[in-house]
Length: 129
Image 1 (cartoon, rainbow, N blue to C red):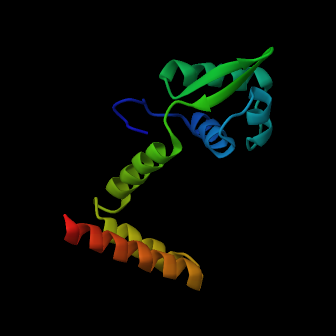
Image 2 (cartoon, helix red, strand yellow; image 1 turned 120 degrees about the vertical axis):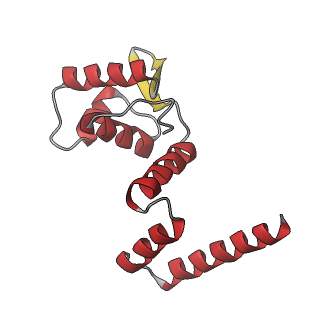
């Protein structure tokens, strides 16, 4: 999430957003049941209201139920989170981030092949610019 658009989130707020992004759309009860050490129903609803006030979550009514979904598309949120991770832990270096991923992940041959294809695609896009 773009930090200029979205304020910092608390641990519990991040947990709720993780559930909502994973499920794409969820009711308060679905969110609560997916949380580690689930708080009370009223605590979840209060946190959801805070997330709506912060502009990161919104809802639609389906009958008497509110169904919540993120205001930022998952790909934009992932890009923003990755950029923040890169800046925070890797001095802004994509190569340091990738090196860490490659050295710490148990990657299959298929995943390594896909990473190679992505690198080749990025190179060909740079050459065509």
